[in-house]
Structures are given as structure tokens and as C-alpha cells.
Length: 110
Ligand SMILES: [Zn+2]
Image (cartoon, rainbow, N blue to C red; front, top):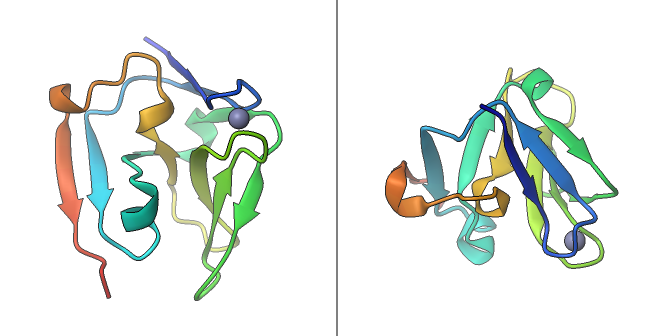
């Protein structure tokens, strides 16, 4: 079963192979502000179309992408090192129900 999602304005379209079984609720300095719920998938299983803008900070390991029109956070991806995964903001997925999946608290506040 594939799952579709989009940002609020529809500029960014996301396709995943399935709904995530769990999502991360991370308390790092950025996620805390953005309230993302992150689902992890191998990059080759994720299709993202539409223009996004990347925010890069700190150790510059990853780019945090958002829609430049409506501002929704869409995904993050590595800027070089191969993590074997990327993060998708599950809040953008059609039918995503936070109460129906496991929410794992990630403690990355430092
Ligand atoms: Zn948008």
C-alpha cells in the first residue's frame, strides 16, 4: 500500500511505500520548534516532487527541507554521508493519525 502526502499548498508531493509503523518526536533545537513527526525510509523508497528549500546548520550533516511557498517542513536528507535512510515529516501524509502509530521520543536536546 503506498501512501501519499503533500504540503499545504500542494507544491510538494510525497509518495512512500507504506504508512510508517512509528514516528520520532525529537526534542532537538529545530524539531522542538517545528513539531515534526519524522518517519524514516530508505531514500530509494521515497519520491518527492516539487521545489523545496533546504536549511542547513550546525555540523552540516543534513538538509532540512521545506516548501518555499507555504513553509511546511517536508523532509530531511543527508548532504553527503550515506545514512541509508532519510526523514519524512509524517504530518504531511494523507490519513496520518498520530494516535495510531508508536511515537518514539528522541532525546537530542543537546
Ligand atoms: Zn507548500
